[in-house]
Image (cartoon, rainbow, N blue to C red; front, side, top):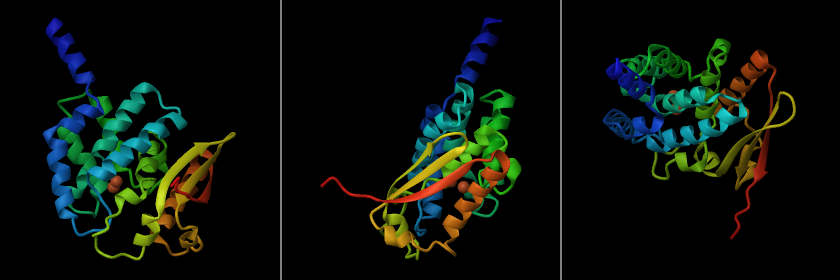
Length: 229
Ligand SMILES: [Fe+2]
Ligand SMILES: [Fe+2]
C-alpha cells in the first residue's frame, strides 16, 4: 500500500525542470540543433527556453490553474521533439514521441493533455484552441521571435534583419476580451508593410482564430526600442 502511494507521489511530482535535466531532452534537442544547424532560426535550446518563458506569463494571463500550468510547462519543454522526424508533421509526430516517453512516468490523463497540446501546437484548426493548455502552448511558441532566436551566422534570409531588430515581445491583457501585443523593435520601418510576410501572416491567422473561438481582440503595437545607453 505505502509502496504504491510512494510511487503515485513520485509519478505525479514530475515537473518541467525534471524534463530539462533528462538525457532524453538534452540528447533530442542536441540532435535537432545539429539537423537544423544551417537554418537561420533556432529550434533547439534557445527556442525551448523562450517558449517556457512565454508559457509562464501566458499561464497567468489566461488564468490556468497550477496543475494546468505544470502540464503546459512540460509540453513547452517537449513540444518540438517531432523535428527528429523532419519538419513535416513535426507537431503530430512530437505528440506520439512524447507519449512513448511519458507514458510510464505520469498518469494517463496528464500525458494525454500534454501530448494533445504538442500535437496541435501549430494552431491549424479552431478546435486546437479549446483546451487552455493547448491555447497557451500555441501562443508561447508563436510569440518566440525575439532577436536571440535568430542566428548571425545562419543562412541568409529576407526576414533576418526584421527579426534581429526585435528586442522584446509582450502580450498584456486589457479590459474584457482585449489584449495588446507589444513588439519592441530597434527599427520600426521594417514593419511598415507586413503583407506577404509568411511569419506574421501565420501569427495574425492565430489571432483570427482566437477571435472566432473566444472573441479575443488582439491589437499589435510596434514600439521603437531605445537602449538605455
Ligand atoms: Fe513546432
Ligand atoms: Fe516551436
